[in-house]
Amino acid sequence: MTQGKFAIVDPDDYYRLCKHKWHTRKIHNGFYAVHSQRVRGEKGKVEHVLMHREVLAVGEGRFVDHANRNGLDNRKANLRAATRSENGMNRGKYRRGRYRSRYKGLSWHPGQRKWLAYIKAKGRKVYLGKFEDEVQAAKAYDLAAEKYHGDFASLNFPHSKRSASCHRKHHYPTESTSVSPSSNEPLILPVADIIQERLHRSV
Image 1 (cartoon, rainbow, N blue to C red):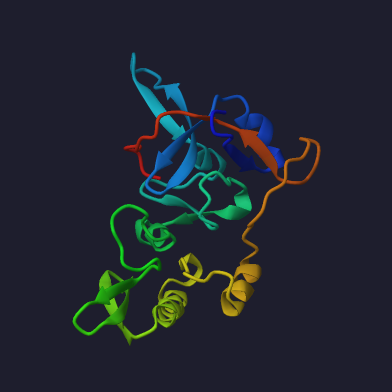
Image 2 (cartoon, rainbow, N blue to C red):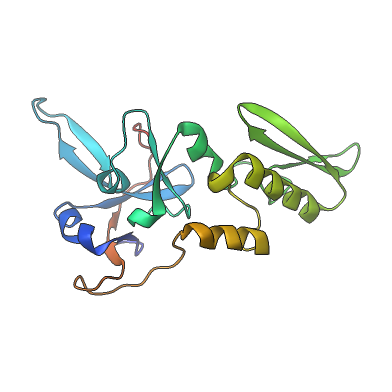
């Protein structure tokens, strides 16, 4: 527990998951709980198992998406099966690299001195317009994201009135509380941190 990371799980999963020694791995922009185990029948080979895949079993080629984008929140209400495309829709703005805008889906046109808004939908880039105001451009992206990405939309302003009503409709968890295993409330499972690295296995 070098950085005080915790995984949040449901009471009915707590004891089963506690049988493993969990560590925190950073994958892309998020943290995930992982444990290692030997591969049966293959001497010396070890595989990494992600906690959310222990909680929600999905078929080959499918992804487990965290609705609130917290990779350590592994309550069943926060997990859903997704395609690679849907999983990508729910990602926030990449933190690496240099970006003129702090919002997702925007770029700056120096010649016109305006913000360009765009979104990726059905494998193609959809142009949303030019804006003098950065916030208005970000809101235009949010409207398009709700239209094209639906429940998997990652919004610049998730607490806006329209988005909040959508969020309540699907009951996605946003907060957690540490309680005893006998309670019906979500449980917090401590995990240890190790050197940040990417997993080769699909998230």
